[in-house]
Length: 220
Image (cartoon, rainbow, N blue to C red; front, side, top):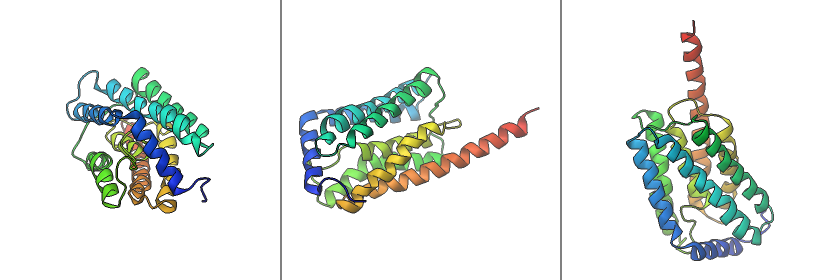
């Protein structure tokens, strides 16, 4: 798929964003560490806090990155921004207000893959980008769509109950759209976006089906 902007224009937007919002990148890392801590050491309010943190990431990406910065080179970013804001609202409604999201680390396949995706988003992604020549401020930092979406997938795999499918749709679609950067602009680390999207979508669908079968099997 041909993009309406060049690799140089895209990287210039990344640079302008990183320089304009610094030191928010550090704040985002601190917030991510809070989410990880609450997954490992859950309490009565941890689910709502984690959901609120994810919602804040998606709201930030929708408004600040897409609507303010990315629209300067791609008018489709108005649509992307709107969709990201919608995803933020879904996390607020389902996770904060309706308490339908519960996050716990368990040493099963979902827990291990979930933590692996989180570590990839926070550590491996920037290191891989640096090794490939994507040096700050021209590197997609945490808080931008691709690494933050991978982080979101990791947390969703750590959800304890059935994961509402509606909350997976936008991140999964973005994993496909955002993956085009890996081909068009040589941002190889974004390959992890598509891989994490496919893994998460399949694993959560399978777990939801298994939990549904258990529920009906135990029903009187």
